[in-house]
Length: 234
Image 1 (cartoon, rainbow, N blue to C red):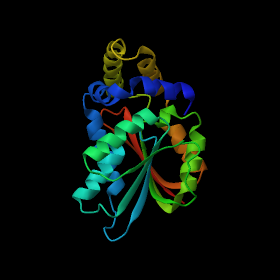
Image 2: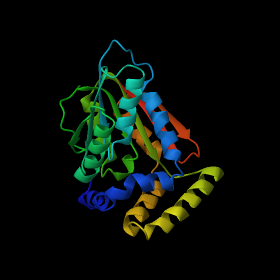
Image 3: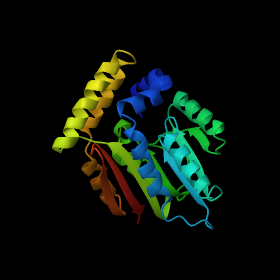
Image 4: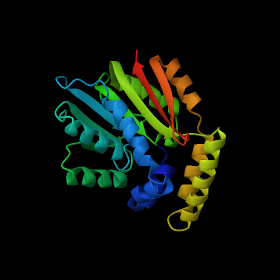
């Protein structure tokens, strides 16, 4: 992640979670639950799993996965590691996890140079961060490297809306975001809007196919601005 983007998150980290919920009208909670459900689906309670959450930010996805595994009495079967390049965001994540008494290994780390050995993880997740990566192909290569053969990858982000309904929602979303700009950080939220417009999940699918991932599936989540991608390492 570029230094410019890292500095941007250091400016908005204190209000990031609040703004995230406001700007999505709390739909982000629904989106994240879908990703959590997909992550823990099919996990066997007698087997232990290592999960890496990349660009974890304030830790919402990692925390929700761990919380869901505890509820399903799988708390000992999923060992979660979460990395992010921004220390300010991670401090928020660490505080939230401690408050909920959820053991998660948070550490500063680069999504394009993941500091773990090859074939280390059974599952890799990332949410609402793909648009921030300087080199999407490099991230996919690194994800493939640290995953074990047959391991699962779950990626979620927002992309350029195409349908009439999704465009209408995004136009409203953008207007709200522009209104909030003046209260938080104009440059940051202008960047977030433009990054959604410019991101195409089909390019991600193509990269993953070229890198040898199999069983790639993309599901659009209502109101169809957000997508959920699942795949397996071949």
